[in-house]
Every structure is written in C-alpha cells, then in structure tokens.
Image 1 (cartoon, rainbow, N blue to C red):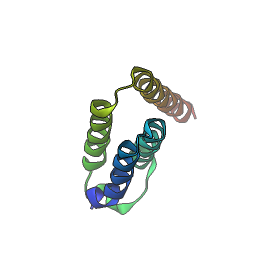
Image 2: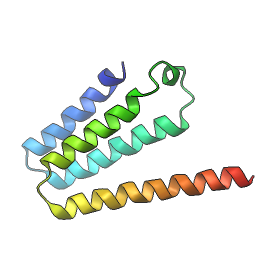
Image 3: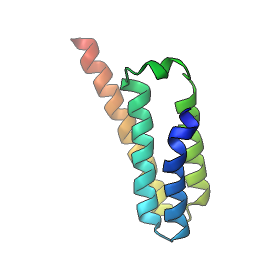
Amino acid sequence: MVRAALESFNDKILNYRKLGLYHEEKLYCMGILKGIDMYTNSSQSEFKDWATDSPGIFFDDILDDWKKSCKTPRYINEMDEFLSSQKQLEKLKFKFHKDF
C-alpha cells in the first residue's frame, strides 16, 4: 500500500531526470523525503500502524537512488544540508515538547 502511494512520486523523479531537469529533480526529491518524514513522525493515520517500517525503507530507497544518479556534487551537498537541517528541526521539536 505504501509502495503504491509513493510510486507516482518516484515516477515524477525519474521524469525530471530523463528530461535533464536535475535541480527540479533534487527539489522534488526533497519534498518527497520531507513528506515521508512528516508522515512517519506526525501522522495519526490508522494505516501507519499497518506498515510501520515501510516509510523508512522507502525514504532510504528514494534517497539512495537519487544519490546514485546525481552527478552534481553541489546538489549532493545541498541534499545533505537539507537532511541535516531536518534532523536539527526534529531535535528542537522534541526538546520543545519535552519541556512542556
């Protein structure tokens, strides 16, 4: 079910790549990863309990596929910075909620 939901998003990444729109591919990939992260950490959906490890697996698969195909070191660095900033935001949210 999770695979089916994410398949069309992955297809769009591949389309950007085929068209040579690498910057757009990177941005779209970032959006997908952010969406998976939000679903994993914030969703109250009952479906989340049915496939607890699937979103994380797809996150890793999408990121790995993108990194393997990306030929622009600057884009790889930007992705790493994006992922690092997302981790920092999660830490701040956790601390904020823990303190209150």
